[in-house]
Amino acid sequence: MSEVVKNRPRYGVMRLIDATGYRLPLAGIVSILHRISGMLMFLLLPFILFLLDKSVTSEVSFAELQALTSGVFVKLVILALVWAFLHHFCAGVRHLIMDLHYGLDKHTARKSAVGVLTVSLVLSALVALKLFGVF
Amino acid sequence: MANNNIGPKRLVVGAHYGLRDWLAQRVTAIVMAVYTVLLLVLFLAGSNFTYEGWAGVFAHQWFKLATFSVVICLLYHAWVGMRDVWMDYVTHSVVARMVFQVATILWLVASAGYAAQILWRV
Image (cartoon, rainbow over all chains, first blue to last red; front, top):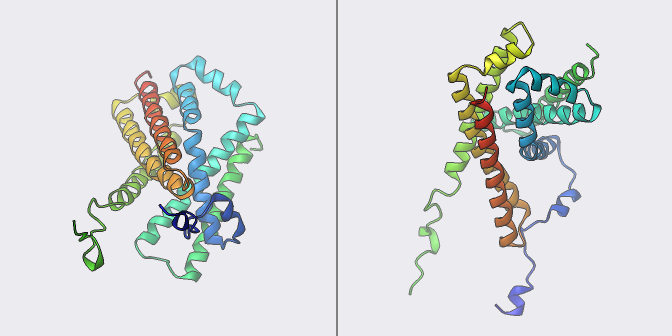
């Protein structure tokens, strides 16, 4: 390959750092959070399975799980996972509806993005209150 | 040799690139969403939030099989999603992207194995 071809700027190939330069609309925020929440659940999948393992294996492991999850750090990790699931679920449903060509115009898309953020954050807040023993 | 793969007759969808995965990601999403609702209903229907109540849900063979099917759906769904992430962000080295992709597959297959072990131990 000639030097000219090699040094040609690679248009359309963006680096992760470039992504921080954009001001996203609400639908864009929902979209990137969909990706981040998915990656978070992918990375913590063995931890989620570990929790399931402890919860179903025996009464002893169930008690161990209760002790383990009484720690603040573990509670925060679980809360992050709960938010990730709720956001991914709601944004995914929005995605599926849009795949059927509903709500594609700018105004409706913005409203559904607000809906996704509202529902996932309110439900996460309720889980947080429950986790930290407010009710 | 003449290159006929140019112009309006260029073959761009020879192996159905993308469509199958696009569809699979959505189908698996629906399966997982239905399972989530089912699990919530079963959990909330049992009035006792104890070990017996919770482990009882996973005691039935049909529920183990349903859960395992959902794990396989999750494996494929997460594979498509993570592959998209690597394709979008790891753009400067084909080798690096392949390492991430292989690591993703191993991570998911190992997780599915762990899930099977948990399910049939109850």
